Length: 277
Image (cartoon, rainbow, N blue to C red):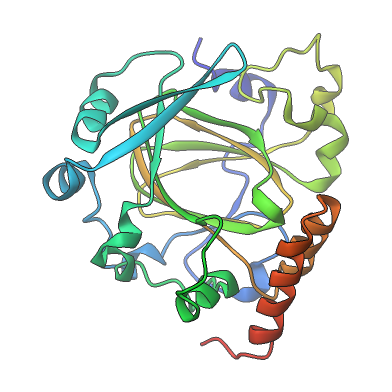
C-alpha cells in the first residue's frame, strides 16, 4: 500500500488548506496557505526544471541523505547523476538532496519574494557581508518519489515558504492544538504506528497535495511533514520579520543561544521600522 493511502483511509480532509490567487498579509501568521499566482511572476518558473539543472549545473556536487536505523546516511554526487537517480529510483527509502547553489549564481534574482515575505535575516547579511552567516535559510530540495521529510518544526520558530517547480508533494500540517498528540515528532504521519502512538488518532491534520506553480506558506511553530509523490524540485526559504521575530527570540532563549539572541535583537532594531513594499 502506498504510504499516503493511510491518510486517505483515516482522514477526510484532503486539500484542506486555504488556497488563493490573491496575496494578502492578513492571511499570514495564522495557518498554512497555498498561493497559486506568486510563482507565475518569477523568471525562475517554469525554467528551473530537471533539464535546466542538468544543462546549467550538472557538474555541481551535492549532498543527499536518508535515515537508516535512526541515523542519517549521506552520499555526495553530481547534480546530473542525482537527477538520473531521481528519475530511475523506486526505493522505498530514497536519498533526499538539498543545495544552495542558486545563492552563488544569478539565479537568486529570478524569484523575487521581498514584497510577500521580507526577511530581516537575509537583508542583514546582504548589508553586513563581512559577517559570517551561521546558517543559510534558503535551499533547493530535489528528490525521487517516496522521499520524505519527517515530522518537524522549522528552525528557530521561523516561518517558511516552499515553491514547487516539478513533481507533486503531499503535505501534512498540525496546528498547535494537535501538539499534545504528536509525541514530539516521533510518529510517522504517513504510516503511523497506532499501537505505539495511540494519541495520534486525536490529531486533525491539514493535508494538501502541492503541484507545480504552487507556493505553500507555513507560519512558525507548526509541525509538518512532507512526502514526495513524484520526483520533485522545490525551493524553500525560511524568513524572519514582524510576524515571527518574537518566536525566534523565544527559541534562542529556550536553547540558551544568547549570542544568537543578541544578534536577533540587533537585527530587529535595524529593520522593525522599515516599510516593506
